[in-house]
Length: 293
View 1 (cartoon, one colour):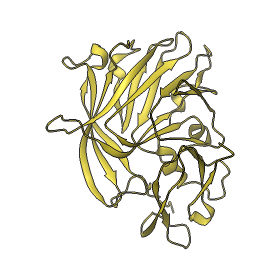
View 2 (cartoon, one colour; view 1 turned 30 degrees about the horizontal axis):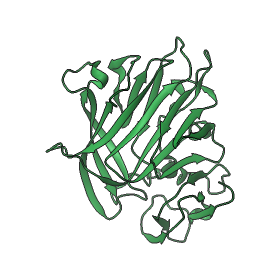
View 3 (cartoon, one colour; view 1 turned 120 degrees about the vertical axis):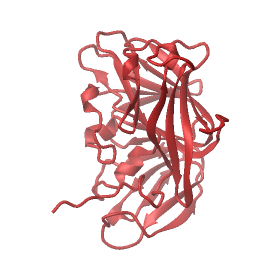
View 4 (cartoon, helix red, strand yellow; view 1 turned 120 degrees about the horizontal axis):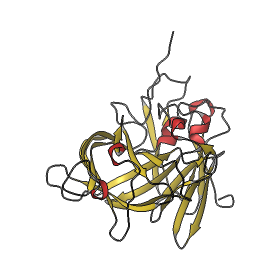
């Protein structure tokens, strides 16, 4: 008998955490490199889900920030793989991209609450020792595993997340709801409280013959995947810079086969605190510290 577990980020009741699903690729012309013509952007058709709210149709637009330069590895491979966004980049280059949300009918900007972008498989190429990195600023939270292989540094208000373990694109998760330990440790989630547009820089540390592929989803994938984890696991998500959040806790009892019938509590935390999720017998606890950030 095989037990099917329902991912808390994706169920008909809105899930444990707000999230977006990228359903289809509407337009593919990032930086003007095609294969489509017209506007120089990637456009994803998506739906935004949040507990207690009806799904909202939105578009996610990705374009090169003015003044930045995009050098693709293979423009035909930009776009969508299952529900994952994919951006290819020539090794040794970097580009600053603007991720923005829009009304799919009017194309007017849309501000969304509690949005996350998770980047998978930040790694060091085993042939060239070139490291993948993502840079961001003006975010609310960052989430990495307690045994993460991703290094982060902050300079002039910009945080750089750099892969620190050897790997390749073959290490990308086939099922984002059920990461292996290696896949969990190579991911980072960047969270925003209210956002219409966010800037991200993608890059690699040096040129090589192996071009880079950046894969992302618009959901707090580490938190969602952790809800599937062994409740006694030591490798848990660490959330830094947590603002006011509403967290949900499953009803007391044995581990459920899906996450329904929850009760909600609101927790207010200082912005500089660091927090970890703990899951004894799947009663979620949020543990925070100012001294261990």
